[in-house]
Length: 293
Image (cartoon, rainbow, N blue to C red):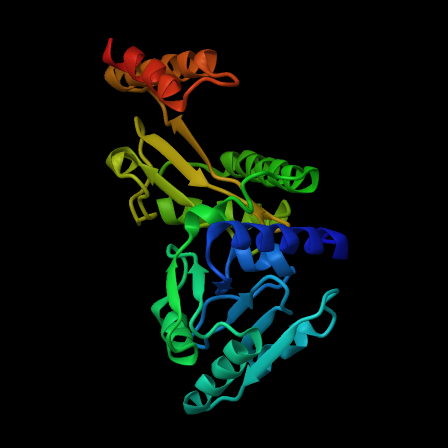
């Protein structure tokens, strides 16, 4: 549960990062960082939504009028600039927000891996003369270190995912399709406490399909001798898990069994080499040396 003090602390840290970074403001569209800073949940859609923040200024939020009920109980001040249904009128709200925050001619940091062209074009038109540049490295530091509540949410997301898989396994039978099994896993994720907005659609693949990274479930039926791969996660209080597990259906090909043993040994070596102050490259190398050998 986000408290006013938690949100205030997060926003203060953002302002400190902005002041140290050399730009004057930051802009966010719907996603994890906007939720982290405000507690608000929006999804990417055909109507643009942008949060603008700058040190010493009240945050500005451009959003559709139909979404304004979400901000009525916010525990911190915010300037809202809702726009009507007619797309020809949307730019006016962006112009008002840019003027209120005083960002015209400023440097504005954005999450380049997340900001869409839709929102960026409205910002560029509204804040004529401003410079919008990738600031993922700076802004990423905001959410890098987790507080106890965040860490517990992450543990809960992992626990929910594990429990959902354990409840799914008894339903496995030869002849059922990857899609059917993926559907059962989704049902179990919801029953065990995952938010419906999951981190990604569960990937269930078997046999040759299991060698395809990020495979989508197909109509292929499960067969004896298949390796059955699950790649799935749960969402709890805005934090997610991402787990991969592989099972065997019946007798396993000796070569595949050997590969599994090598991977397990590489994993063990990497874990043994890891520790405070150890470069990540050394951990990676410990695993690769086992595989190479």
